Length: 119
Image 1: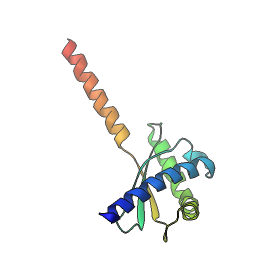
Image 2: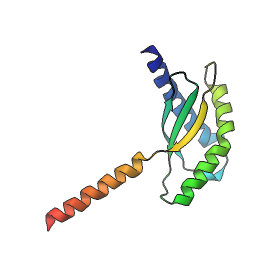
Image 3: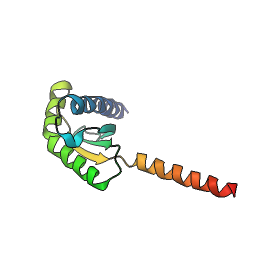
């Protein structure tokens, strides 16, 4: 139970700090406009999966953003190590958050269903 609480607390802290690092330290134009939506930290606090979203729906933009985040991973992890008071800084992996796209699809289906009910 205490380990779960610690992982949750660390994931919130990592989310806040990575957002700040992306805004202030990373100068790569490929990561401009990236929003960190969540972080999952493993129970042993050694790895963290960082979920992000961008406003564009283009596949090429998603690939560029992923490449930019992978390139900046070392800088972000180094900054996290300086800012967080933990023994070992978790290894970071970035993944696109699909929940926004999933929510848009649900809205689209609901509006389509609503339009069919009118006629």
